Image (cartoon, rainbow, N blue to C red; front, side, top):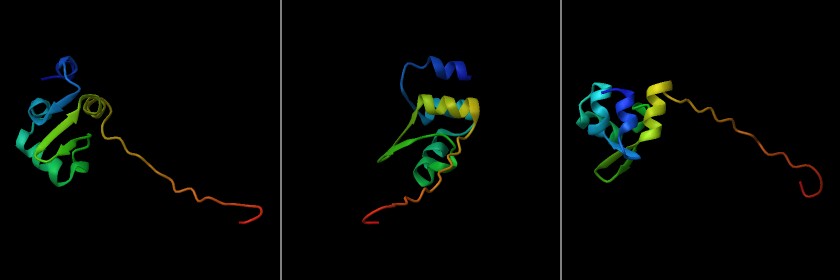
Length: 84
């Protein structure tokens, strides 16, 4: 299984079974991790009840570039003038 194989899958959402061979993990391990702490997987997942789905584009991004780190700054709002 290669990135090109994933690109050719005609679905927008993948399953753990779809991605497991490329990652070298058991599909059930991916499902369990998605339910317990999906942030540790490194790619986006959607968990609905017992179903785990993986957005294809997000997974491809992870394969190409690795884990995306989002840095969020807290901007305080400062009001000046009357009523402040």
